[in-house]
Image 1 (cartoon, helix red, strand yellow):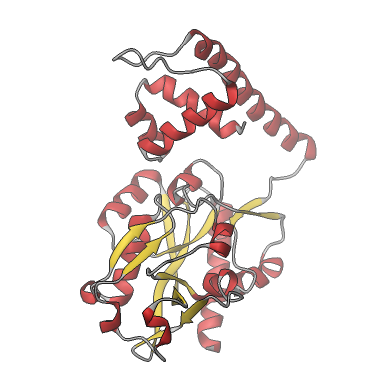
Image 2 (cartoon, rainbow, N blue to C red):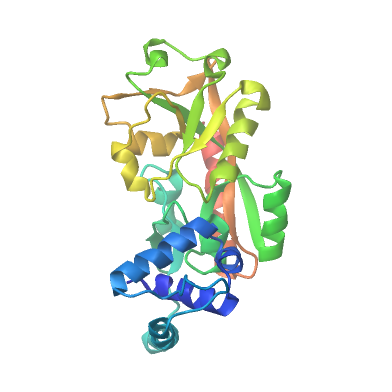
Length: 303
């Protein structure tokens, strides 16, 4: 059982509400509910008394709560103590880059301290990953012109440093009627469905795609969670499209002979704005973000 699962259960009991706990954990209510059910299956007994109209935990749930709180506290204490014993700062935690990313190749020359990559579950919202300390810095699509996301970023103390644009691509199965076309136009996309593989980040990527291609492109959007990005290796898009950053597309789909990749639309590159997100209070992350922006500027000059 993951420590994060225990933390979710403790938060649920404190909030006495799935709705309030899910909001505090930056999860959907259905996701939190499924996590609790999975815990109960693993434990072999119910944690929540679902026969009551009000929120109540079972006697076994109360006992488990006590030990879960102790485990969380002991983990935090152990981590802090080990950092002191090691006599050094913990590594900077970076949301994983694609191996072909120029940022990936530049890190060793930019940082004079240790760092580690963190693979985020696709159902973990970026803002939650930052505020919970799962990652210190992450490459992100530009959310600054999305009022709802900007309000949340301000509330959470999240900063965003733009780096410029990156190329995107459209992927589809070779069985898709569009796959036989030598190139795609905007009119080809009208009425088509594009899959977004993260419910947690659905709104932000939909907003980015519409800003990139235009609100009038006529695309429909549907969430199709794959949980972890590695699952994209075997995903079947059916008759739908998949629009993603070109680096990610080449990594996960480039070796598949059952898929076709279009890197241009109407004969032009598809460019989405991106940058680095981090907590304003995290000076180490801000320093790294500024250095990575210099890499982005050098890349734009080279291209």
